[in-house]
Length: 212
Image (cartoon, rainbow, N blue to C red; front, side, top):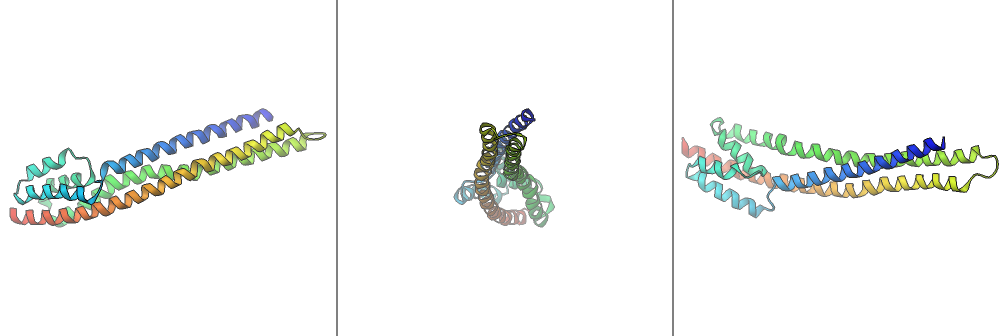
């Protein structure tokens, strides 16, 4: 039985280690993904939109599309989509822009972020499982001993209980802070893209009216 408790204890440690690695990996991916699809600030976004508007005002849709083609950030890709589908009309294009932003950008980020949230919830639970396991081992050593229980065995079981709890919290708390920081970045990105889509829509409306 002691061997079984030791094996399960090792499994708990391995599970906590894997959760920590997976949570950190997903958090880094999400952080980088948000950085890849957003402008660093509104000024940088305004510079892009000003350059795009210059091509649109001239009716040069090819130049506008080329400006957006190699830029993997959300707003340039949305602008390229709008230019490509300009025959749909401004109302449909505007609706499609928001749909594409939700599906291609936010859905992907939220999917990856959900894995981080899963680790945040799972790590303390796995730690709690180790705690229960350690206390079970400690009580078993007391009940199975004919005389005084072996203090070394009890100490090992209690140590397992405390370490797994501490590890679970040590994994969850930093990831929770990182998750909240990422959510703040996502909200700022949504606000910035919202402003950009509004300005882009007005520019496209003027350009479409001139091309008729």
